[in-house]
Each structure stands twice: as C-alpha cells, then as structure tokens.
Length: 268
Ligand SMILES: [Zn+2]
Image (cartoon, rainbow, N blue to C red):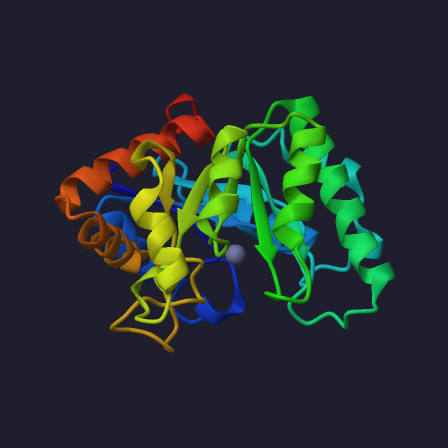
C-alpha cells in the first residue's frame, strides 16, 4: 500500500452508478481504504462492500454518526456483533456534532454524549480503535473539550480525531492522551489556517490521511463529489505545509494507519 484513505464512505448512494470504478481507481494507485459507517444500516453496507474485495485492502468501520443516525435506535449489541467480521477494523464514526444544534437543546447534546460513551465503552472492552467525529460551533459550544474530558475519564487512548478541526492547544491534549489526528481535503482550502497549523506541528507518526469522500473534496476538486483516489492531494498538501517530500508523508501516514487499525493482521 502506498497510502491509506483512513475514512471514506464509498457505500453511500452517491456512488450507486459507478462504485466499483471509484474503488478500483483508488486500489490501482495503491490506496487502501476504510469504509466508515454512519448508521447501523450504512455500517452493514460498508461491510458488504469490503466483502466484495476479499483479497484487497478494503476494510470497514462500524458506528453511528451523531446526526446521520437515529440515536434513539442505537443498540450497542448490534454494533458489537459486527465487530466479529474479519474486515471490520474499528468502531466509528461516533461522536459529537453540535454544528446545527440550538444553544439550548440540552437534551440532544446529552443523547449524543450518551451514545458516544456507549461506543467508547464498547471500543474499550473489545480493544478496538475508535474513530471520533467532532463538529463544533466555535464560540457557542465546546464539543472538543467535552470529548477530551470523556476520553481522559475512561483513560482511552486508541482513538483518531477524524477531520480534526480544533486548535493546536486542544490537538496537543488529544496527542498527550495517545490519540491520532486525521486530515481531509479541508487542509487544502486557503482559509483553513488553524487546521494547517495543526497539520504542520503534529508529530508525523500520529497523522493519518483521509478523504471523507463523497464529502470535502480537496482543491482542485472542491465542491465536487470526492473519492478515495483523491487522497494523495491531501498528503501533498501536508508535505507542502511541512516542507518535506510527499513520499515521507505517504510512508509515515500509511505506517500510522497500519499500526492504529492493525491492518497487517487482517487477511487481505
Ligand atoms: Zn465521515
């Protein structure tokens, strides 16, 4: 593998017309991919997709996104059962998304926090890596601080902050807890200075690359449907920010993903 797209959603409907071609464009470039679930049904679809590439580096993660899934319906036992599948390498994405919440919607925030904690306990019990989704509304909520508190309370260290969009001060605290940070195409946007600072300063062995496809396409595809084959554009942007060769970023982030998700132990 030359690169790992550590977080993408090729099972989503956006790829119904050309899913296999999209996946093959990534595999042909040596890009492995992790199909991340956002609801129970979407998690099952990710597993079914990974099964279609039994000998290729296509894996699945199972979770319920805080605003895509029906959090009232989440049954940890169903997620737990999915972990037994040999292509499932992680729990997630799960987390807190306060972006569209009204400031006084305490109940919705509590429900998200409860589900996050359930998934965290499952990851802890089953010793699985955990993909954390956090979306803040800067100046209104502090979802990152809440997640930091929860991770510290459970002394849970095997996590990655997907599409990390917080500041460097908080990034340091996630890194101190033992976590990883992953970056999307947003890092290629000119106005993403805070994210670029984190991508420049974080230890390279704790960074991962992701596309979050079909969302967040990097420049020059901004605004279009994204795909895992665009992952090198994210790695290139990080190489430029750090003034190091692309190959160094590709190798370090691939090794980080292999270690974090235990990819070499899985049968591909
Ligand atoms: Zn995602």
